[in-house]
Length: 388
Image (cartoon, rainbow, N blue to C red; front, side, top):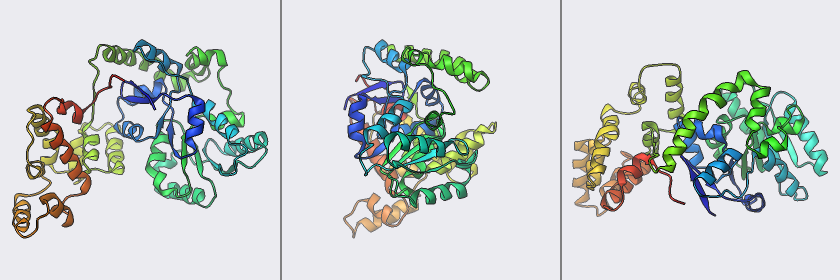
C-alpha cells in the first residue's frame, strides 16, 4: 500500500474499491481533511491517534491539490460521508457486517438507522446510541456506552461525534469493545443519513470548495476554523516543499512513547493547560506526582544533547540520568547479575522497577545513536515527512 506524506499525516493512497475490499479484515479508519491537518500540528494526543490508525484516507480535495503541489497524486478523495454509504451498500447482502451507530442528536441516529436499513433491505444497522453533550468526559457514561455496544451483535462501530473527539474516543476504548472489528470515524455522516443536514452540492465538493458551503451555513461556528487556519497551514505546506518542515514531538508524546505517561494522564494535563494556566506541560506532570523533575530535564535537555553527539550510552546510564532507576537500584541489579546471566533491564523489569515500554524506547534510542549515518535526534524528537 503506497503512502503520501503531508505535514505530519501519512495518507494511505487507496481507491474506494480497494478500501472496501480490505476493510472487512478489520481496522480503524480516519479520514483527514484540511481542518485535521491544522489540528494535528497542535494536538499531540490527536497526532498519536492518527499514527496508530490502520487506515488514513484523504477526505479533502484540498489535500489532493497539496499532494499535486508535492509532485504526488492521491488516487481518490474518500470522505467519511461518501465512504460510509458505499460501505453499507457494498456489504448489503453480507450478514457478517452488522453496524452500530454512535453519535448525533436525540432521535437522529435512530432515523438514520431506519433509512439505511430500508435502503439495503435488511437490518444492517443493528443498534444506535446518541450520547449526551460532553459525555466523553464522563467515565460512567462512556462505560455505559461500551456496555450497550457490547450487548449487541454489532461488529462495525461508526462514530459521528466530530473531530478530534470521535477519533480519540475510538482509540481510547477500542480494546474494550470486544465484538467490534471495524471502527469508522464518520463526522456528520449520521446527520446526512438521517436527512437532518444537507451535504454540499457535488460540484463544490469536487472542486475543494465544500468549506465555503459549510461556512455559509454555519458562519458563527466555523469562521475561526476555516479563515484563521488557512494562513498557517499554507506556510507549513511551503516549508515542507522546501524540505524544512519538522513536527517537533511535544514532551507529553515523548513521555508516552517512553511508557512514562498514559493517554489518560496526557488528557488530564492537556485539559489543565487548556484552562489557561501559565504552567508548562512538564511542570503540571511534576505537580501531579507522575513525573520527576529529573526526568523532565532529561527529555528536554540531556537526551537531545546526547543524540546530537551520536554517542550511544549504556542503558543503565539513560535510566539513571533520567531518574528512572536510582544508583542504589542499579548497584543492586549489577550485584544480582553476578549470579544471573540475564541483562540488567530484564532483572529491572522482573522487579517491576521499570516497564517494558520504557526499556524498548531506550533500546531504540541506543540503536539510533549507533547509526552515525542517521540523524537520530530528528528520528526521536521530530516527525519528518519522508520522500514517498
